[in-house]
Image (spheres, rainbow, N blue to C red):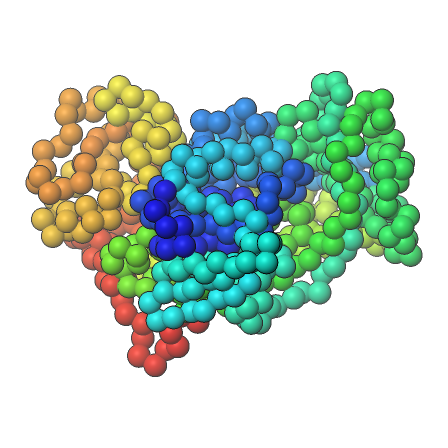
Length: 543
């Protein structure tokens, strides 16, 4: 823990899942982190109910992977149904998705936050509860944040960077006075969280009932818990949906009554779709709901926030350690704003299909969806969205696999078998099918060492790895051989005619290359981009 919590490398405003994960990812890199949270105690009720396989991998990178199983349940599918109960769309989920985790996991958000909080405490993160950010002064080298403590006093904290993870009503975003793009999508829904008194199977786990009489969502929310969401109808007053009696009335047709369940909460939410047009101003950045809001129909709200901070944490670390120019932080906004915008537009598109209350329009929608799925039923959820641009290998930017999320399989290292991230480690990874020594001279090895990168040679399944790591220059990072046990990585490289793959700490592929010359060019491009200064005449940190 820093001796003085008012002096930190990074101040994070907001201690929800996004801010808490960011604090952990930074602290794991040895940075001094102070978190400001206006609530005196953790929020006891759920908001998000699930996360996807890519997000599970990112949560595991924050050190809570071994504990996720006890607070989650793997979802077995997602189905759209007509008012009559016929299947409009079926998306099966698997427990072994392409990123090493279930395609979708349901959870009780307070339980997830407890895991992250314990991890943050173990790493020495300072969390100042009952401290609300009320002022920000951005300087050339540091930022001062003024926090009100609730007893009439204030504290001033100093940091090299500040990240606003303070939610939809973000003080940090409002202080920066950045413009916001609002798509004008606004529907009010009643959310009912229940705890079941007896075990009950739900197949599929998640259902979207596309009934024009009352669009309804049914989803898992962790072991023993479920959520029902009911759309407020045109002409229906807010009062008609308020109170426990209204919730029980709507839940009753699903066999959920006071005798079978405990109502944990019933509350109305307005689903919105918007994003901040700038995510960085000087030394202040935005992440999570402070940067973007989306309807829940694709289940990507919290997931998008976790992706934000997974993208941001390693870039902040490199900038703070002088391994990259501060302009690297501009790539965070460039990459994640584009991805979040795609997720929001996709969620809105789903919402416009779901929130139909006219029976004729609903019948037309049903016919269109059924016609569109004939002969091409989905085999699973859509793969993770690739980065459309940003910090990618220039020769392969915009081409697969640059920007894609690298899959994860099991590998074996000296008899230790497990998921790649656990066996090899996290951070930058150079994967090769050839002997990496042919491409790595002392200068490039030193560069990789400065990034604490892993250099890994892949061995085909069934082959034995060498008894010891490859003999390389003493200045090299650990260059090891692993057996591609699940036969995931070598075929992946072969698809692109590549012998080397450079993967970023957020699991996005920086680029692929073939042969020693291509590998050297790949590494040199990363080095040059990390050192790139702000272009002449460009505004300082306004992205």
